[in-house]
Image (spheres, rainbow, N blue to C red):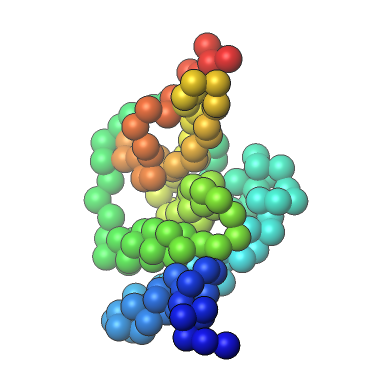
Length: 157
């Protein structure tokens, strides 16, 4: 198989990601491995378990409505976990739009801070798009502008 063919497609991005990961400090590498080990069962569970039950199993809650509060100050370990999840899920090959998996992993790894899973939607033309993020003490991690929390989106058709 030619080198050109190996670089493209599904193998190209993971190969570059692995090469970049090998240059990270050991603590960052170990955190990324922990995220990968957790991400695989989460991927299976997203496809087989009802979301409210999965969120409970992962140790946090779902939002009934939007709330704001003071921003948390993450310690260095929590910061490393957030960075690792964002890096790993940026290259996640098993689905389009890994925001739900990212939010579930972040919620699980930050469960001591009592994160809350938020689901939101937006409408562009006739298409409705969904997005997931977590909120920790008022700080939204992974939220994108323009997405209304699901409880506030009843007017979308």
